[in-house]
Structure formats: structure tokens, C-alpha cells
Image (cartoon, rainbow, N blue to C red; front, side, top):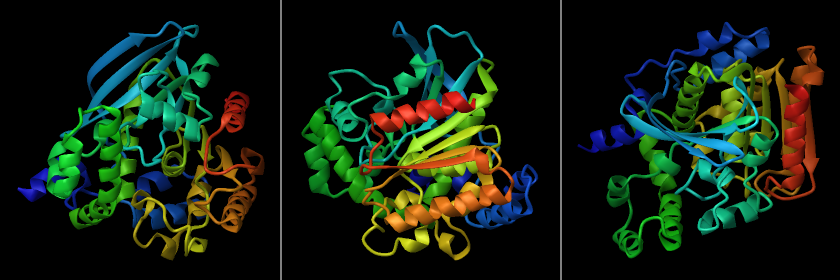
Length: 375
């Protein structure tokens, strides 16, 4: 019974019995021998199925005047999730698309909504946008500038957040009683749900490993499945696909872009460092980014090397308390050396911003400029 509960949440495709031999498929797409070696090492650490696809189960379209919002419910095996597709009003398909992979921020109740919702009744969303995004639903600015935006909920967030069944199974009675004192979706309910989800991350990390996989593999399998869904749509320009993300979204962008050549341009925001240099106080990141054994064979700049010769922009926050500054600096220097060695140094850019861990208005403008210039 316990296995069935977790299998329903994790997805049968992430179980030990599923095939994980994907490295050769990616290596055959790559140009450089060094990249093939990196793929071989990565394939020993991540348990992926590159052919997974979310099948559209339901779709709801809302007309907002300047843009249209599609809410898509998708299914892969027995797992249901949700994504949003924002379409510009003044542009005919096929659309250039920005795939935005949302961040963590301790905000589990919602996923994709944080990047585009502009509803004054969504107090928690508004506070979150104020803290990290200069109070802006920043994805809408990309839509206004002629890009469609596609954003899925990540595993453990939004429609993929912890189910009531798992909360009841894993959380302590006091936390559950406190949660049930409030109406679902209310400010206090969301606050307590976020607290419970944060407290349960270590336990969930252990259960994922006992299940026979790791957290990044589950995240990436679902990101791959949503990208495969997107690529089947006839209303997108498959030669103009950007992938970007802030914080955890930057981590997700790094790995998804490294595996799929359909992504022509990538922007990694506030998540690039050398993990080997992060021993100590900065090793307080979410469990979601930990791949057991990763630093024995690879580091984040090596994964970024797989994006070459496609376009890559890394936005670093100079006063980001989550990363040592020297590790942020050395990581982009290593990536630059890869791109130069592959004779595509002009395809890589990076910039340090004089702020903490955020994606503020100045950074948003630079991201839009980079996309517009490079697509």
C-alpha cells in the first residue's frame, strides 16, 4: 500500500524497473568529444526517459485582451500536472516561445502562477513578486514584446504539490490540525502549507532515494515531458525556442537545455556556481538540486558545456548569499573556456548584478534584450 501511494505521486516512470539508458541518444546529437564524455558521466547519475510526453487531458482558454491564457492539464502515465501557455494578441502563430521554468522560494502551493498572475486578491503571489521580481508579473512583459510564454508546474509545486494523502501520511498531527483550521487557498492555509512542505523536504528526499531515483531526475523527466508536449504543437516556431529560469528554475534550465538541442537560447538566472566550492554555510540549498555522487565526476559548468554551440547567458547576483562569490566567478570562467575551446566563444555571455538573490527589473530588461537580439 505504501509503495502504491508514493508510486502514484512520484510516477511509475521514475521507478527502478524503468530503463534509464538515455546517454547514447544525447551523445549522438553532440558535436564535440568532450561533450560526449560529459553526457556519459551524467547518464550514470540521472535516471531519465527522454521520450516521456504529457498528453493533453483538458484545456481552458481565458481571453485577457492583450493576451490569451491557456491552462493545460496534462497526463503522463498516471501523473497529472498543469502548464500555462500565454499567447500574444497582436501576433499570429507560429509563435517564438519562451519556456520559463519557475523557481523555488519556499512557495510550494503555487508554481507557474508566480511569474504572470496580476490579481490583487492573490496576496501571497503579490508578496512573492515584491520580494523577488520588483513587484512584477514579469512573464507578461515578454508576451507584450512578441513572445509566447510556456510554463509548467514543477514536481512538488502547484498542481504537483503534496497531496492531502501524503500530507496526512508524513506531517505531524499538530501541523495537520493547524492547516485544517483554515479554508484551502486562503492566505493562512497557503502559509502553513508552505511551512509543512518545507519541513517535509528532507523526508521526501529520502523517500525518493528509497524509491530508486533522485529528485533532479523527477524534476527533469517532467520538464522533458512538457517540452515534448510543446514541440508537438503546430502553433509554435520550433526554430525560436528560449528556455530560462531563476534560482531553482535556473537549475532546471541548465539541465533541460543541456539535453535538448531544440532549445536555441538559454538564460540561467541566479544559479551557477561550482558545487565543489560550496562546503559550509552556502550548502543550505533545497534538497531538490542534489544529485548523489555528482561532484565526484562533474560540476555545474561541465553541464553548461553541453549547451554549446547554442546561445547561453548566465546572470549572476553579486551579493547572492546562496553561492560563494569566487565559486560564481570561477564557474562562468570555466564555461567560457569550454565555449572558446569549441570555437563558439561569442555564443556565451555572463553578467554580475549588484544585488542579492532576485530577478529584478534591470535583470528582466537584460533578459528580454538578450532574447530579442539572439532569436
